[in-house]
Amino acid sequence: MSTIRIKNGRVMNPATGMDENTDVWIRDGRILGFGKDPVNLRNQDGESLNGGTEPEDLRPDQVINASGCIVAPGLVDVHVHFRDPGQTHKEDLVTGSRAAAAGGFTTVVCMANTNPIVDNTEVLDDIIRRTADLPIHVKQASAVSLGFKGQELVDGQAMIAHGACGFTDDGIPLTNAGFIRKAMEMAAAFDVPISLHEEDPTLNEVNGVNKGAVSDQMGIGGAPAISEDVMVARDVMLALETGAKVDIQHISSGRSVDLVRMGKKMGAKVYAEATPHHFSLTEESVLDHGTLAKMNPPLRTDWDRSKIIHGLQDGTIDMIATDHAPHAVEEKGQEFTKAPSGIIGLETSLALGVTNLVRRGYLSMMDLLAKMTINPARLYKFDCGDISPGKAADLVVFDPDAAYTVEEFASKAENSPFLGALLYGKVKCTICQGEVVYRD
Ligand SMILES: [Zn+2]
Ligand SMILES: [Zn+2]
Image: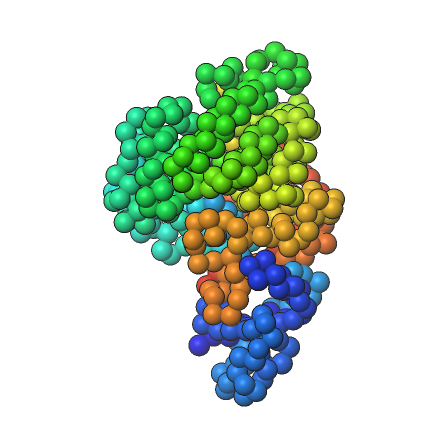
């Protein structure tokens, strides 16, 4: 029996709408209840949980002072790359989990573009076996196609039976409409999401920078928004036809946001993720940060960025997901066209949301947290993202007003354009299954 009391915080639980200054009580890895008085703990509806009698063992073993802080469900990120197996010089399951915990995340979904690719149960079993001892919940997605070739489906039945939580070839776009329809039918049959990286390679000249003013200035071509838009348009229609839960990953183009909005209106089960960098930065950042602002799909114009923010506001974009993509210093140190795409994101995601969305008045804190907790949890039917009594004690305690300069990372990598940035919103403590897994 172990009991934790998180004292004096502002408890926000988007799953129930709870927003109250109170204490959270945790026992044996679960949320016990809320209240200042241990003899009268309540659930979120104010109903008494222990009928006025203090259980003898309720003296807390640990008290966490959350004065001035928000206490929320542990964050959920449905899009990370932990590079394990195969590229563990960039990141591995252990360091990736530490970075997640430091960022307030207690559940993440790893993409399948490891080496070997997660397209068979042998690779999947090995990863899932190694996630058991990690400080947070690490879920694994299955590839859609064998070898990421976009031609033959994986054995979906076996992959789901062995614990895969969804399907994705993230990193390699699926260009064949007939194949993607079959893939969506497979995902629909298992009622799991299929997550799509939307860039038609035949329309891209150079990856990682928007085709426009900045790529012209650099004289290197670029990746135009239309490359995303044509794929999103196709997949919104296929989502409508197949009934699959289709997650448009790292949406970057303003017109794609409009297409997702239209798809939702038509009744497609289409969802979208925005990354912190796509709502925070524009193509101009490539001039300042070079390869540290190179990612696929690229940062686009201020018009696209404001459309993404509008999509977050009106619910078109359901989730914030980081696309945490670690690379080694030498790799990112190459010239722009040779360096790999992607940036890390787990440790700056919450602060970028607080700084660039909440403090600027675009989103309420509750809406931001919904997009980082219960919305992704519901899409995947994960039993997390909700701190109602009886639920797993996965929580983050953060100070929304604490300013800090981004200086170091728990991740093995440090490829972030936000190094040196002044951000608001500091994670003080992350708790997973009732265990403190990060403390500032
Ligand atoms: Zn991607
Ligand atoms: Zn990705």
